[in-house]
Image (cartoon, rainbow, N blue to C red; front, side):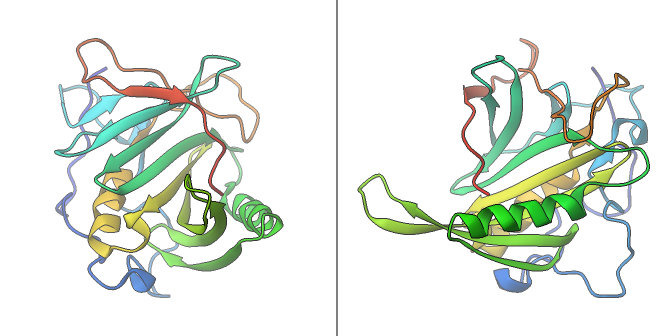
Length: 230
């Protein structure tokens, strides 16, 4: 598939306001527009597919931005062999992307973030909601056991973006939760992502499947699907 994002006036490599300490990174003011997607992520209907563009890797349900130092890893459901999410890594920072079908008349993020909070609290974690670059996000800290058997915590920032008949869930992990520059870099990647839902009927919440890129594309590592961090 060839595609070209419609040109917008902002620089895709800007920090999106994420050059402040993490607690305020990417926070929008109360006067910000209600829409969560003024600068992306995009629906496939919102990009120009007529001219070749090598900005993104074609993963089927998602078109994900290329970039120096970025590594992509597909998570595969061992029962079905279907790739369900992709983790984008840059150094010790990561963002996991999962796209799901949503109702035509309403989004899913309001409902989903309450489910995330309830699950985190059930697992003994702490949860806070805050303004983020895509609207209200959920900031979670979960207790974990390290490979050395010690007790620790895993922080994450979970964002949900409602699009036309889809929702894209982005979970930021690692230094993306503590370093504003690392967070801003991955926010840029999420903004440049294109969702390809397709026209087949799907129930709300069904995962939009992904696939490994064509042979002409850079290799993408696959691994068995792991339980979500939140």
